[in-house]
Amino acid sequence: MKKILLLTLLALPALAQKKGPALARPKLVVGIVIDQMRYDYLYRYWDKLGSGGFRRLLGEGFSYESCHYNYVPTYTGPGHTSIYTGTTPATHGIVGNNWYERETGKTTYVTDDKTVQAVGGTAAAGQMSPRHNLATTITDELRLATNFQSKVIGVCIKDRGSILPAGHAANAAYWYDGTNGAFITSTFYMPVLPDWVSKFNAAGHAAQYLSQPWNTLLPIGEYTESTPDDVPWESAFKGEAKPVFPHDLPTLSATPSASVKATEKSSGEKQPAAPTQNLDLIRSTPFGNSLTADFAIETLRQEQLGQRGQTDFLTLSFSSTDYVGHQFGTTAIETEDTYLRLDRDLARVLDALDKQVGKGEALVFLTADHAADQAAGFLEAHRLPGGGMGTAPVRDSVQRALVRRYGAGNWILDFENQQVYLNRPLLLQKKLELAKVQNEVAEILRQQPHIAQAISATDLQRNAWPVGLSMYQANGFYAPRSGDVLFVMSPGWLEAYAYPVVKGTTHGASWAYDTHVPLLFWGWHVHHGESAEEVKIVDIAPTVARYLHIQEPSGTSGTPLLEVLK
Image (cartoon, rainbow, N blue to C red; front, side):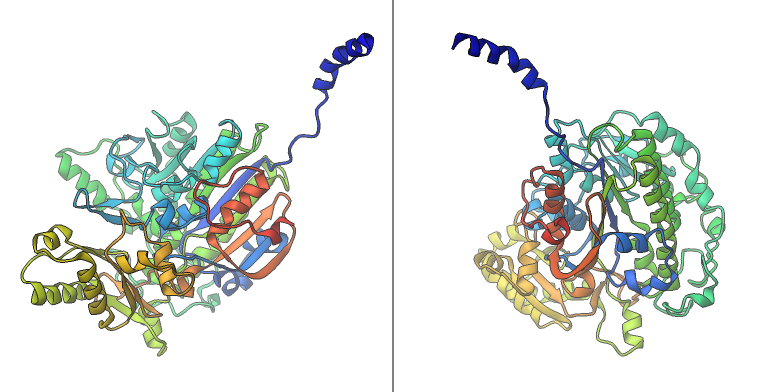
C-alpha cells in the first residue's frame, strides 16, 4: 500500500504539467459603431457599395435585421453606453449627451470630468473621462477576466464615442481635438501621449484631407438614391452660398475655427499649438471617417492588438456620418457619398484585421448608436406626416401657463432631452406638491400640437411599463439625472432648436426611424446568416460575453443572441 502511495506522489508533478487545450477565444474583438446610421442604409446604397466593406460583413457574417433601441432619448452618449453595458439609461445613468444637475444648478456634459487634465490638446477638449457611467462595460469585464492582461483601446473623433465604449478600465481612449488637429486623451488614462500617437499627429493628416475639395466619389448623376443636390432643407457650410458640390474645403477651412478664437480670446494670447486653419471642419466631411480609420489601423499596428497572446478589444466609432446627417439630412447626396466612402474605409479596416490579426481570428460587431428621422422639409415637400417643432415655444407655453396658475417665477430650470426640469426650490417655497405640478405640466404638454404623450416622473416610477411609449421613457429614466415631466413627439416630428428655420435632421425619438439600427456579427466563429427576430441593442454585450466566456457587464438587462451563437 505504501509503495502504491509513493508511486502516486511521484507521478503528481507529471500529471500537473499535462494541460488540456487552451480556452478558445478570438484574438481581438472590434466593436464598430456608426453614428446616426439607419438600418435601411445597408440596402438603400447596396448597388453602389464595394465588395470589401458592408457587403463583406453581410455576405460572410450574421445580420439581425430587426435590432432596435428600447429607450429614449436615442442620442450618442446613451447609445454607445447601452451597447457596451448591455443595459439602458435607467441603470447606467447616461440619460443624454447633456443633462441638468440639480445639485449644481448647471447642465453637465456626458464625459465631462474637471478632475483630470487634457493630454495632447486643449482643456476644453481633453478634460474627459467615463466617470458618469454607473455600470461596467463588456470591455471592463474583459480586462477583469484576464487580470488586466487584455488591452482595451477606444478610437473615435467624438470624445463620448471613444470614452464610453472603452470603459472605466481601458488602457487608452483617443478622440479628436479640432483646435490642433490631433488625437488626444486625458490623464484618466495616461500622463503623456505615446510616441507613435505624437508622430501620427505631427504628420498633419487632417490638414491633408482638407487640402482638396469634397467632390462626389462617383459622377453626381449616378446618385439616384438621393434627392437633388440643391434643396431648401439642407444647410450650407459657413462661407458657402449653397449646400452643393463641390464643397471647397481648402477655402472653407482657411481660417481658424470659432473654438480656437474663443480660447485665444479667453486666455488673452495666441495659442502656440493652434493651426492657422479650421481643422474642426473635417468632422462634417466623410474624411473625418477616413482619418478615424487611419488612426485605428495605426493603433492596431503600434499596439499589436490581437497579436500578444491575449484577447484584446478595439472600440471603433465613426462619427462624421452624424455631422453630415444633421447638416444635410438622410436623403442628401452628401449623406450617400459619406456612406460610399465609409464603405471603403471599412474595407481598409477589415483588410488590416486579416493581415495583422489573421483571417477569422477577430470577432467584429457593427451597429449604430441611433438612427435618424427624415428631414422636416423633405417630409413636407412630399406631403408626409412630420415636421420641425420649436422647443423654445413649447417651453414658453408651459412657463406662461404656470405663471397664470401660481404667479411670477422661473418655474422651469431646464428643458432638454424631451424632459422638463421644474424649479423644485420654488415649488417648496410656494408650498406646492411636486407630483401635482408634474401632472399639471404633463397635461399642458399633451395639449400642445405634435406631442403624442406626456407623463410625470412620479407616475412613471409608480407603475411598470412592459410595452408602449412609457416603456421607452421608463428605460431611459434615471431619477437623479432625469426631468420631472417627459414627453414624446408625434411620429415624424423632430426638435427644431433654430425654429422656425428647420434644416437637416436630428434624432432622439422612440419611433422606428430612430430606434431601428443595423446589427452585424462577423469573423471568429460567426456563421453566415440572418434573422428577422426582433432583438434589442442591450443584447450585444451579453452576446459578446458568451463568445468570450466572461462575466456580462454589471448592470446587464439584455440576453445573449442564440442564433448567432449556434
